[in-house]
Image (cartoon, one colour):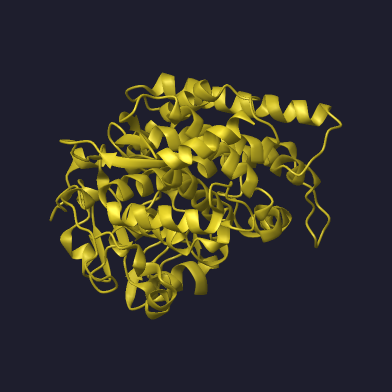
Length: 465
């Protein structure tokens, strides 16, 4: 078990503060949220609906699994994310519309199809490693920026079948501006202000969203006009049919899902992978365990479909990183009608949040919950915990369709990076969270980078060949 003050980088507040809602809204979740089963607060003014937060695995199972059809997307999430993620995507579809899209896209994410992508994951990680090896020794890097570039390259190749079809830096800059605007659109939704209400940077956000959609539309139009087909996700979406009805996706549904995969698929993996590197920089013993495991299983060869699933400790590091710093800090729903949840009455007007940040650090379910311990995810310990005490990808029939994709991607990348480099902390750096779309750090995650000489020489020979 490794402890560090940065592992809980704020003091939970007994009463919510408006200022925290614009920066790190996790501060507004009270200390009781880490001990109790359910908590709520009315907000800052009486006219704002009460928000209910769940941290009890049984109540979570009831809402997300047993009675999932009774709870829909909450209005705050819908209002704040519909523009960047895409209202016609699988993320927002409901009822019969969701079911047919899920059936049509499910074959794309079969395990054998995902294993075939592992060489792509490794190639992208190795490309980032080549960039790092060109830096002077003991260089300072931003781990989150690097993982964002790398996972974007993965999504570009996996989704489109080729790299370089998008201007990576321009696309990522537009994405950064777009996601930074989510904090404001969430506040507008919370106060029930009209759509189009101006906020600082609103024009830039709108322009960035338009750029992202225009790029996706351009790529889709080019593929439609081409006779080229392949095994990439876009090709599979074009060929997808509902196995029950034979229905194909409309152009709007395809571009909506392309946009959703590019944004959500790349961003959440980038954030989780960035935190994993940062945590390993803090805990050098665990970093060394990852390095030894990868060398034992893969040597200096690329991590491939035959080795990626033989790295249990590397996988446990990823899982523990998503426990401590879940990319999405909440899963939100809203009841269709007034009802009960367990013994509690809930109103159709009140959004209900599964408070993942508190759940993943809850005193009932985790020993020393603010400490870093990848061995929490050893198989015997996982079996001893309630099933719904850990939900980085959600739960129930709406569990993230890209979960297995993301896990294979992150294990392959983390193993590649740690085998080839030593990651250290930057003296004097203090962590501050900046919550918008995902759990990011304000100012990035600075780390010190040192190549590992033996692997570097082997890699240099391979690169030259």
